[in-house]
Image (cartoon, rainbow, N blue to C red; front, side, top):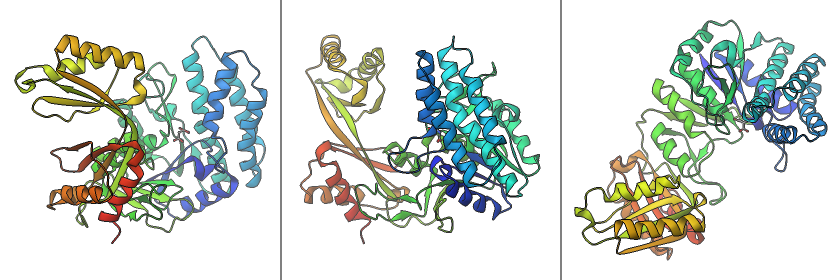
Length: 450
Ligand code: ASP
C-alpha cells in the first residue's frame, strides 16, 4: 500500500487536479491520498491557507469578510467547474465556511485554527468528489473519524501516541481514502494545526500508522536538488539520501519536504519518494534508512543566513565547571534557542538566529555574561551565514574538510567558524552573509561539478 500526498501547487487548478487523478488512478496501490489546500497557481498568487488566516483576522476584528470568503470559494469553484462537477460540493464548502465564520469567537486561537484547517478539509471533500465523478471508488475521511489525535499546541501540534493505533484501521477501508492534511483533533475535540506546510506531516503519520510500503510526496519539482537552484543554475538532482541527510539539508533551508515529517516515516522505516506531479515519470528522490551507494562524500550543500554569534572568552574557561550551562541559562531567560556552540579551550561561541534578538536584549545579555560570569571578552558578530556540507559518505572519505577549505580559500572567502559533529554526516562553515552565495558556488564546483 502506498500513501500519497499532494501539495498545494498540485491542487491549485482543474488542470493540476486532473494530473492528480491520473497519478492516483494509474496505480492501485495508491490507496490513501492526503491533500493540501489549493496553493499558488502562479508566483504572485495567494495560497488558500493564507487567505483563510486573513479571513479569521478580519472576522475577529469585526471587519467585513464577504469579499474574502467569495474569493476563497471561487478557488474551489473554478476547480469544480473546470472538472465539470455539480454545484453540490461548492454549496457544501460554502456552508462549511459560513458556519465556521459564525462560530464562537470567544477563543480567538481555536476560531482561527478551525478556519485555517478548513482549507485542507474542504479540499479533501472536493478531491473525493472529483475522484467519484471520474468513476473511482473514493471517499473523504476526516481526521476526527479516523482518530488523528494531536496535542493542543496550535500551529505546532504533535500526534499523540494513541493516534497511530486508531489510524491503523484505515488500511481496512475499502476504496481510496481522501484525507485532509495539516491538522488533527485534540482530546477536547478541537481542530489543531501542525506547523506550516504540515500536510507532509499528516502523510508521514498515516504512512507510519498503516505501515505503508512507500510514502509518495508529490510536489512541483523533479527531485531534491544537491544545492539551492537559486544559487547554482541547474544543479544535480539527488536520487537517494538518508533520513538523517535530509534532516540536515532541511535544517539548512531545503524546503522540499517538511523536516518534522521525516520522524514518523523514519520510525517505521518507510521510504519516502519525493516526486513531481507535473512529471510523474521522473524517478524523484528517495529518502531511506540506509543507502549502499554513497557516490562521493556529499549528497548536498545547504546554506542559510540570519545568524549571529556571541563569542565569550575567559582565561581557564576549560576548568570552570558549569560555565557553558550558565551562559545558556542567561539566553534561556530571554527565550533564545541556540543553534550551535563551537568551543575552544578558553572560549565558546553561541550561534543563534538573529531574528530572536533585538538591540536591547543583546545589550542585556552581553552585560549579564560580563558581570555574572566575569568573562574577559565578549562580542557579538551579526549577519552570519551557515553552510552545511551534508553526506554520510564523508565518514568513509578522507580529506573532505581539506577540499572544502581549499575551495573556499581559492574563492577568497574567510571562514569564520567550522563545526563537525561526531556523526560525521555534516560539516558546517560559518561565513559572512555577503559571501554566502559565492561560497556555496565554490563548494558546489569542488564537490559536484565533475
Ligand atoms: N496549507 C498549509 C500551508 O500552507 C499546509 C500545507 O500546504 O502543507 O501551510
